[in-house]
Image 1 (cartoon, rainbow, N blue to C red):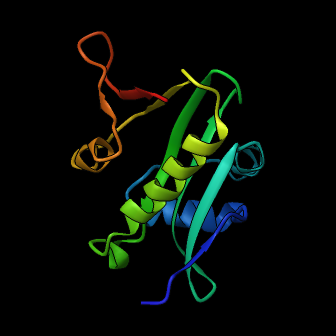
Image 2: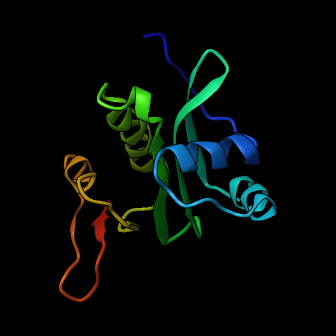
Length: 134
């Protein structure tokens, strides 16, 4: 499998298509365009030209960072691509954000097991989510 890693913003339609086939909710196309452009970091995986995986970081670029849109097309799942996306995100965070920043995400089950491998832990009982400090 020859998958290309890129840091380019996908277009709103392919972004939403990937969200839908991956089991995530669709987003408004105009809102998607704005949100994607305002991302702090985006990593995409492509098989030829086809978007087959992605993840991104949003936040205030100072104290708070939130990981969103971790998605892999179903026919590509089970090949370590989610881990590859998280590795790219983890590298970005380690190299680019201030010390003691708060990094959070909302984990779907069973993806929480992947996020644990990158140092995330449950924030319950006060909230339902995962976090870590870098």
